[in-house]
Image 1: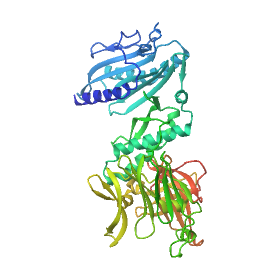
Image 2: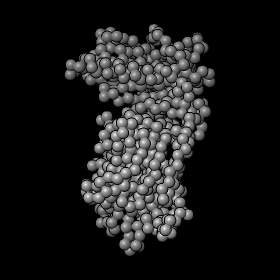
Image 3: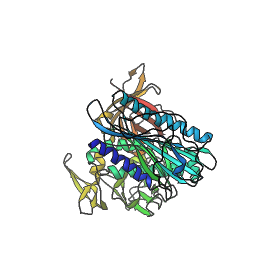
Image 4: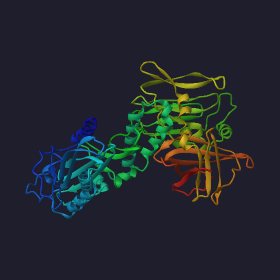
Amino acid sequence: MKKRCAVLLAAAMLLSAAGCAQDSKRPEPTEPAASAVSETSAENVEATEETPQKPQPSRRFDDSRISTLYDVEFSYTDPNGNKDTYFYEVPQIDDDTEGARNINEMIGYRFGYLVERALDARSRNDFIDTSYIIWVSNWDGPLLSLQITSSDAMYNHDVGSYHYNFATGQELSNPEMLAHLGYTDDAKVMHALERAVAQHFDTYYGYIDPDQTAMLYMMRAQSLSNLDGLYSYYSLYPKYSHGFVATVPMYTPAGSGMYWTDVQVDPDKRQGSGQILHGQDEWFTCDVSADGAVTVRALTDYVTPDGAMTYQAMKEWYELGDKTEFAVSGCYGNYVKMLMTSVGQDYAPYVFLLTENGNVEYIDVISGAQCGTMVNGGPLFGINGIVRFETGTAYDAEYGAEYTTVYGVSRDNEKFNLMEAVWNTAPLSIPSMIGSFVSEDTGTWFEICEDQPNFYIGEYRNETREPATWDSGITYLGMDDRGWICSISLYRMDLERAQRETLAMMPTDYGGFYVRHIGGESLLNLPKDESVWFEMTSE
């Protein structure tokens, strides 16, 4: 009974969420066609699949133009004695055109198969793996967007959308549907989609304990990857007011890896809070535009009041790169406050960004300036309801010394040490990520150590890792749609300098990384503009 309630609740939520996007209510069920199946109990089952209903004479553009392939509901007790109710509603486009026939064939193959499979399992007194199939429609004049959702026994959803123009008799692909809505700028659409996905993830999982931050960073990066599926197989339909709803794979800590999740996207909406923010420390400035773009710049003309230090001297001391202006990637929040200051016991400038939802994000300025890539570190999960920043000091028991830090202060005047939270994020410390990874394509290997930032790289020949020649280290900078952006440094004593390469590392759930060269010197022999698979090895 509990499972039945859960299934009905999930179905109701899906229908309710999409129902507000419909231009017309779905009519009461009509008598099914000869090809349809309609039943209410396990005793009166008879399923056939022949020709869908004939086109209706009505030229109204509403759900009367949608016919039924399957309309099935029955109660069933599985071999373990668990009784449940299963219901399957599989629609068809009621029009006699090649476009409609093509859509109907795809629907029948994808969802009709599940119904036949369920009916066959019941006839054999076997387990049924599809709990329900439902559909919702969205009309824009003669243009229909039909979304169909199936759910299995573990509440994993499979979602498909189909677009059809009754006026022209043509099937529309996702790119054609987006063009119909007026969204032809792919970069603008993808930026809005990435922001929507990131904000959805941060809203739903921002409250989770900070100890889980490293794992959440992995899931957030995975959720932001491969969103170009919007132009091929992701489900999308117009939003009733403006924009569209996309169904994307959202990686979650719920235990099943990924859920198909609806996010609302509006590429024409201003992408930001509308506020203009400015921050400055001794050697750098940071600016946030009204549309949420974040830029860090070096103050190359600055000289300390005593005249002892110029920017050039500071650059050489901290081994900064030649780049002096940085467009910060991975900034997906609506920012309302900012603080830029140096932390720790040495010069280490950080930017802290406060979102309109009270979450905090950060930027490691020096590390980014060293490798020429500035990235948002991501939200500090578990720190919520922040209303302002304060500078102060904290005591490091391990080193027995005080250091400068920034506190996030909540509405209840609770203070959170933000630098402690930054140091505890450490996504590369996830136990499943500690170890050696090899690539036959590049002939190189790297090892992520438990005692970071220690990190080793070397050549990989004849399935053997050649010993590392020089010490090296790895620094996590932040994340965007490419994955974790990291800087690796190889300390070359013979050159009396460090060699640096910036990488995009996309973690996976099956023991490896997709690694991509972003900038700097080539230390892992990676090709340009291509991700390479590095597999974990037991060596």
